[in-house]
Image (tube, rainbow, N blue to C red):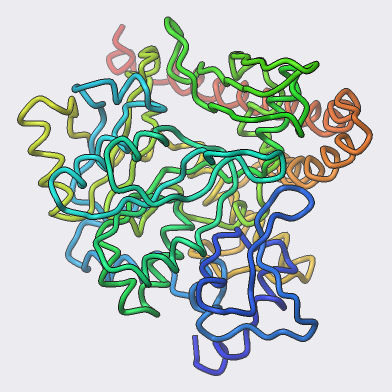
Length: 475
């Protein structure tokens, strides 16, 4: 993009009013005229108190959804070199693994295989970093503050205060400022768009670039508003204003890896309560529905965190499905991280097996389908409506998409949009059944179409198998 175009773009003319702000806070870390606050629906968004405020060119360049910023391929080329193998879905990679932490209780206390917490502690104990920046439960809750925030840890015990996935909004303007002002070596954990924002910010600050020693990426479905946690609490008898804590990934023994529980704590009828329920019993648990999803997530084409030194996520693969303790997939992009991982495998501290990059694709097949094929269609819809949207590595197109899949994608957009509005109204009226009733108007037709689409796909597979030569069918 030309310098003129970069200077002309303003976040408050493009990204913010079109719902493309993910609330990461990178712009606010560099521009004192910008703040990041929770909106009425529980989503962080960039704001300015000045009526005619214009963002600086730096703020535009560090925004992961601005057209003034580099894309993931451009960043990865500079970070990992063009000679590193590159996959169009998972990005650059040196090695890929599946497995878990074999030592201690990292696996049992983590969301899946325990790799994220283990790696952060290992980096501290090997004196490879001085500080770990990660998301943890807020230590004191007064009913107004968010339940989670970014913190800076210096010890293993501090790191292990936030061992699990948090499906909750956070922002990192404060910790970016801390890194720039406090000398040291930092490992930072984030979802893909946050890691991208960090990489963009490091291009604008020599101090940040020097101190950002490792970026650990979390494989991401999408970011939720605060309503996702509030709904889980409300369904369990705790009003949104009385919710004190939530564990989004409570492991349930003798169940499949995806059949985890959700534990909420707070007050109900004047008494302190803690309730654990299987996530499948909770209304918002279907990630395909996308309740309380940020709009920006539907315009992100990075599922695994392509600009991170290492990406870690759930191994949603059939060979690990029935291990309720959980299994990670791992994509390593730098020699220094690979040395840490391989050394621990040799000593038996990690139980990992190398897997081909195709297994990473398979483990996140739904995410890639939604963020690549589906993204092309959403870009086309935005263009047809004459709305601004970010340039992506996917071209606007509906080519090759069935009518049913296009309808599924359209309903996902409507479900996400309506969920924010309907839940806010439900809280004001204290009417949870009313929220369910509103959402069912979209979710029921979505489920009908999605089920028929799955049946159609299975039918095609069955017919293809029937027409295979007998020898290939194994009969």
